[in-house]
Length: 279
Image (cartoon, rainbow, N blue to C red; front, top):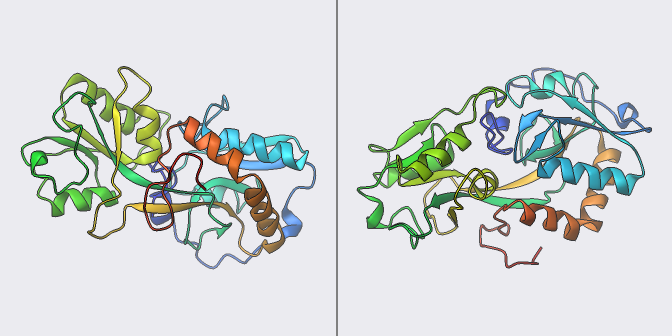
């Protein structure tokens, strides 16, 4: 459900990609033994870009180092057809970030859990908000990505009528709704920005005056706003999945450092905030 066609880091993609149809399961025989071959979006910060500046790039570099293999990329926009044109065509062997529970890929164990967040001016009237049910939000204009889970919560709390919508399905090489939303927040055109935490946490600290990130961990409505993020491999590649699970387990502390350096709000499996240093 979240994977980024805007980049919902890897959450809205799983819900919006083409269904897998009748493709046959693959085996680990297809996995390269000479390189770590990664499928990634070339223009999708904070997740990945060609320059290797995203946190998924950094995690891929960590894995390649531990495997003692060179890192090779297959670049393709994270949108409809991504898995079909990358993993399924055997052009690569792993997607570094993929929401748990979708049959397009075989998921590894999750290596982080994150949540949607409210981004606000740290000195503004919304700085102490903890939930979308707070009455102070009723007369405020919030930015929200149309079709995202947090948009449903905004609607249930009566906030969608005055909200400013931003596109979900875009090619990040030519349009960036998350950056546009934060620019509008800094310019005063909206009072707060509702977005996927890994995206919001990064852009709140880049592109101008730093904004405050409020993880929406107190929301009680459905759908849930926190998601487990895994790595994705081809269906049937159980040996490769187990190897990646082992790498994740043994290097979780280093992975957490990378995520926190990029401002990713980390929560536990029940959506509660993690203390710094917690796993």
